[in-house]
Length: 410
Image (tube, rainbow, N blue to C red; front, top):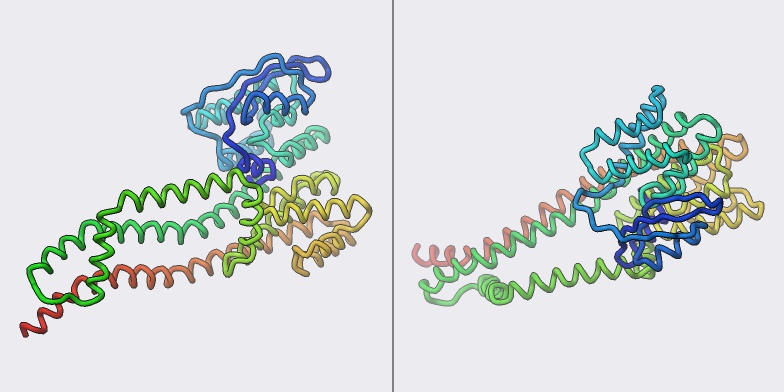
């Protein structure tokens, strides 16, 4: 799930889990868990929620796994199906919690069930766990409870999360594929340089005479690699670790990365379409649930998964809140192609904004599918040429002396 809240957590230092107990504004004793960088941060976050903390305890890291976006998506569908089928809410939590193989998810669901059992609303219980249930999720559940259509909105929420999860998985696989190939190519090259080339070097020593230039270059690289492999691997790990930590801790780097990613050749177009698909899908889902437009825009920016669209959404929200139409605000942002703004304009004029946004999301999700397929088709021959050139070049360089010797003997 791509939300602004989640992105924020990635920007900061390492966080820990704390269990807390305190009193809310009504004087009622409440308890729950919170993630924070330290006790002071946890206390401050709870005070902002109007909770007077009486107990705060750091929890030990659990080895029982973690709750992923995929787990929450599956849970959403299971809960929606059971509630729609008439299964009581508490029993639904029991069934899903006992049926999962993830201890962390089971604990989360049983904790939420305990809150509901003690009289808490479902939306309030979900809001205690913002790491897993964002504002959009909680707002839709709350709207469903208030309107008496919880089953309908849970179904809509599950469909939304499935579509968002699907598009995230496609983008992730498209970006992971070339990285995985580069890693494999590096490992194969390292094995050849450390183990294969030295064996050939011993054979060449018995030949006598001068070796071809390509062979000498490969042998020189192999000698350096064999002598300094620990430095090379250590440096690569250190650089990757440093970069990942820098991105986690620096908002400026995150912003720069998001801006650059949208301008990349081939990948940029796909990422832009993905952001628009998620943006329109989120707004469609929230607007259809009866959430006011200005309030709905709070969750939309983060759901797009890109800082550029998050900041653009804030500007759109500011314009809409002062009386501007959504169409004009979106046009002013410069983030959406004419097709999107025209669909929004039709939706506003006809009173079917949620439907038009949903159709726009369908269109761009299909566009992302096609872009991923096109990228895969483009990358496969390029990767074949790259690997063939790299491995083939090494092999030819090592066999050149043998070919040369053969021609002399012949």
